Length: 447
Image (cartoon, rainbow, N blue to C red; front, side):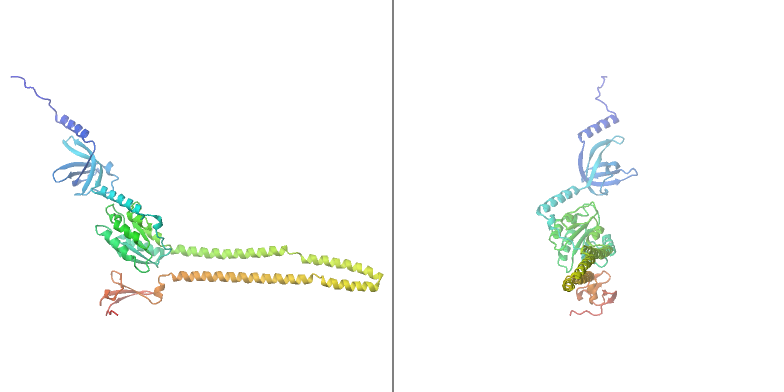
């Protein structure tokens, strides 16, 4: 029997190893999209799952060192886009995809759409600094546009009460996530544009993924913010999150809580500042008065010394008197005549008249200066009283002090503007200047 000639015979390990080498060489890096199934994560922290579509499936592994900075958690049934290298797990003879990147399917498209819309609106000037409206120093009424069920409302109101409890807040409930959210947000901004007395609008939402925050990247929201005549503050997401609304808004806050600090000043700090200004004003006037007194004393020192002048004159008189006495001995009658003439001249030249007039002018100048300082201080005190009264008029409760009241429906707290909103039997809460009353509607009239 002739020896049968056999082809090259592989062992299982050798064949598997060669298949692995050819597979890794032929497919060094591939992108694959599909649906996650059979997802598991053992104690090692690695992700193991099967990526499938309608006709086939592919085993995948995502090692912990590669997904430690992943911004989302893979979910069973999720559509994803993967990048990795093909290899063979030799002990089982199975080929698999070793991942180094994973993202939800469509995230890349959202990022591209974000950049495209951002470039478009920036070219139109919606981000320009000259279009930003300044915020009032102390708004008396502001609106919070957000979801009524989230923690944003409670955190916002709590911090607002700590800083300036008298500011009136209008809560405008809208959806902040989902397909209908952008339309509701834009409609809310348009509706609030005509609300009487509204000075600031805060657009707020907590943090989330790019998909969660997407309503705030919609063009309809951006254009609603741009055309709103009331200053809009964007407080969406966390400090690292940026949306189109942040760029269009008149002011961006890193978080909803930070928006309160940007919009409303701290009442305690304002009071401390007013006290410092008042103290500085009093100290300034005291310094000016002391300076004027010192200047007055300096001026008085520069005046001629009338007492020395008088002494000199007296010495001169004595000298002349002695001269006159010697001359009297030469001729009594002539000396007497000369003495009377000298006496009359001395009276006319006496410095006492000038001294009396100078003292009168000095006393009059002192009275005038004191009167002017009193008038100046009185005028500044009137101005300070005016500022204090004007500050009191800014108190939002001043309206209620004039006899007005605010009625809200219980339990939701909606403000009643029309009697038709409160049929008979409706529970109401009526807020007046001092306290509140819970009431029930007995009868409704359209008058």
